[in-house]
Length: 496
Figure (spheres, rainbow, N blue to C red):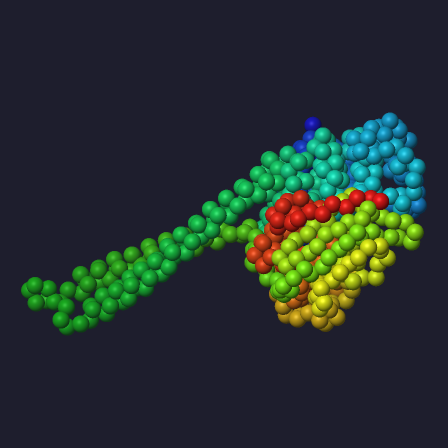
């Protein structure tokens, strides 16, 4: 066991007016299985790269272990897996790598295939196996689940649960619960470290948020009462002070006692000052609350009722040239129904979505769409986004003000509206696509892995939205918690 000591870490990008991290101090045990969570754009990847020494920073980071980052860059993707392993570790011990591959459910023959012929899931597992075969290193694993199917996520979470010495960034709640024993969260105003998994952290956060909101409400009432009391006291003191100069203020012997009246005025003024002090203290206490409350305003969607079956899919097989990808699949989509396609990587899920959405796809079987069916489609890949949000809104026929309002509700920084979308993070790009779909009135919403890179709080917003408005949907998504929470009916796909 050793420690990673982070002391007064301060960092901000050149040209930025605000620091991403300000005097952050942490002590991390290298035996921990550490989960890392927080809203998109809060600096999780930046934090990992600071540990790697990629940027100059203020403060200090010290550790007796070396850091390795996933996913690492592979410049020549035609290289065999064995050559990549040798490039990373030099004269590696083959049995160590073979053991790691076996633990991840991969056969050794994967080492003798070009990297670019592997599925995304195979690539993820191969890179993790290469990094974990190294000794005396601490892994910084950045969003490994984004291209993993459901079975792949289970396999990787089991694998990580048996390991020690890593930080893993993921927004998949179930995945995190199954493989971590500590959690690090980037909040609105600080970084928090807790023992436990994601669920225990989230429950603690909900309780803390509820406590702070209740305390805030009580202090607001107290401040309101003190404000009213201060006004009454000040008015009474002013009236008493003025009374010193009235002719009818006389004692029992008929003499005017200005000293007595002045004393009463002084007491009233003291009481007024005491009220003001209490009010300032309450305001100070209130200022320490709600700093880390995550705003989760309700989103809206505009599904149109079709009144009958929206689409009927019969014996559908996707074909790439002469090659069949999947076994025939049949299902129908009705108003208010959520269909979730599930299957291993490469079994044609995305292609079926494109085919139902009227994209140009080569397939066997039948897709019968209702006449006049309006579809809103979100592709899996967001790399095509270029230019400004305003240009994009105009191109897709979305109301720009509405689009930006939805993005703001999803914690999208207002400052990013002035930036080009090609410079957005992957999570920000996904939010642009989601917001555009939510702007559209449609009978059927077809979303292909919409939650890739999307933070947990936004995922919960989307779940709440779907459950409230019950749109007809055809989705591919590997977040098991999400699928259960929206009551989706699962359609399984199998390789041909």
